[in-house]
Length: 287
Length: 273
Image (cartoon, helix red, strand yellow):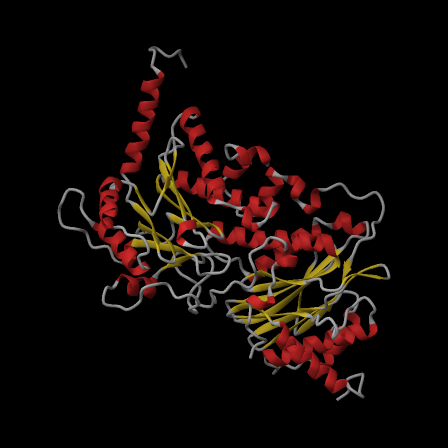
């Protein structure tokens, strides 16, 4: 390689990189993260059943991303490794979204300045608290900036229009059905002002961090439950706490396992000696 | 590890490919892996866990363990837990050196959950049993110094809905056991008891009763196995696994089972029937 022929100012270099990353992100479909009365919901427009934009990181922490799949998938896996390592060396309670957001920020920032091309991704990290006041949502951009947002955020191609819509219509303590309806309405709207597109359960990826669940609070909402929640004339307003079809984890793409009970067999702690709390598991021996 | 915690996620965090937490630890923090530590120069005396029993019934399995840990002729712990949920559909019971066994279970639990989160699907039951075998094999050096860990693994195969039991040896050999099995110092007596009490048509409730009675028989003849402690209300840990998942029987239910076994054996200490 020959020497660089021209001088490029640092300002120009950073601006070019930022423009490049922004263009990449703007091509993708959008994701909305918003709080509801019993937790935090992630709603993504994603026709794929196998390639997720939304994922579980840890007991109370979820992840959503837009942009280049290979780049955010790499960050998702790194986040799971970070969280599992933290929880393994200390305790499950010591894994926080704030720590993870910082690690992501450092990583994205280093990639932005040091590598030949910045990541074309935008990430949301959310942690559900014991009550709505404890909920945390962080937004991380391609250059490593972190913003701590309250209530809602939108990322991706139509983020600005969706954000404006959320500012207008979002209110605290909405039931899940209302929150999903709002998110889907805004995702379906045409930013150019045309007819809104039809977004059915097949082209949506929906998951929640449900604070009423024990230990692993993340669950995907798919199939009939999603249809019921999106149908305004259906009385379903929230994901049932212990329905037999609810998986406590994130099984096969898009589907909750038919046999999962939704109840965690162990208490939230890393040490196996302190995981069983008889008083918290009142189910008896097969009666 | 601490350097990565403070700043950028280091290269092993971002290495593509592996869904195994153990492999990740091996690259990033090998000192956290039980198998990578320097061996003690001479055999060490440490608390040992004792008897675990497991038996299948139609639609699932029951695994139960006594609560005693011993060190030589002393009781090191009266209310230790030795049966754990490995994930939502499987359980693991431990016998041998308690400290190493608990660390192994802790790592195994994270291993299964880590795989589940990264792959987005549950590991197969055989896959889980094989992962555990690999972990035990890495502990062989410790086993040679008298710090052996021998777990028993059981779970429901979600493809068939049947309960399956896997046993191990110190070299990491993994064997599937049929109907029932027991490990630990009192296993000889528990096995005899299980052989006579197990019945293919038993339901979960009957299986729990058989497990408690087999532990009672083990405690009757093995000083390292703790019987039900009526004064302190310390009962065996009993886990029931079926297609719905793992659940632990609560103390009042086990107290009732223990009372029934004791009543049956009053004046008939061998439990002959």
